[in-house]
Length: 324
Ligand SMILES: [Zn+2]
Image: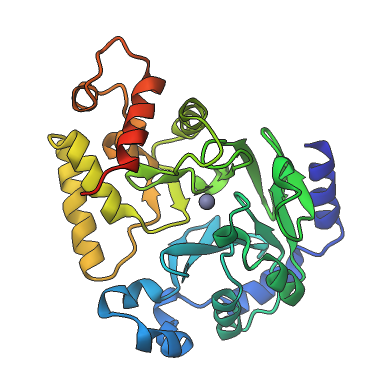
């Protein structure tokens, strides 16, 4: 959207983000993930957590390359908040802050006092719960969907389908992905092939349909499936193990899925996150992305003549009542 683009450009031009000082500060504070001692930050919480979830409780650098650094901060029961940084300029952002406390603790530990943006994918409380406290503490601008501007706390910049804005040296593209909610959006960073999907796509799953139809969600997922297979997908929940049980239920002879399920079980046994994940791997194993597959159609009792959208709807409905 033009106004959103202009607003963001104004922020960029004002020198609030980017520049040599920001870069120097960022380089000074950059600490490899192996040097971070999250136990020190999370000692109070880890005491009351079970062994199985302790490792997931630790913030960790889950991606770091020439373009972007992504730190994953576990929050609430199974949410992930992402702290992102453009490597060239030091421009920083928080994606879907469920709550402020774990983000502020992590930033304090890193000696960081400012973040440039909050990027919200949708209005649910476990994605915007930290907005206002973080905005006040860090002076960040909040970006969210034009369609959700009435229900995203503290929103400053609105975006919509086709919007593009600068995030430091990178460009961010916005997809509207209705289905889970009517105003849900995803953020695509082509330079680093990073995709922030909120509750639209999960590893081996997809979001429940609270405000949209199955057809809308299928169209939304198709927008994401057009991206490169080596896109790294950052979703907002650790639902993968439960999702894998349903995936096997409807697609139990898929070799790639059987292999992935084993890897997921090994990771979860050790409390390791299964997110982010590769889009291509998910397209080969996630039943919600494969309604054209013969085995899945047979499992759903549907013929080869049904549309993909109809089969997708049946898979979604089946998952809603799956007890396994
Ligand atoms: Zn949600």
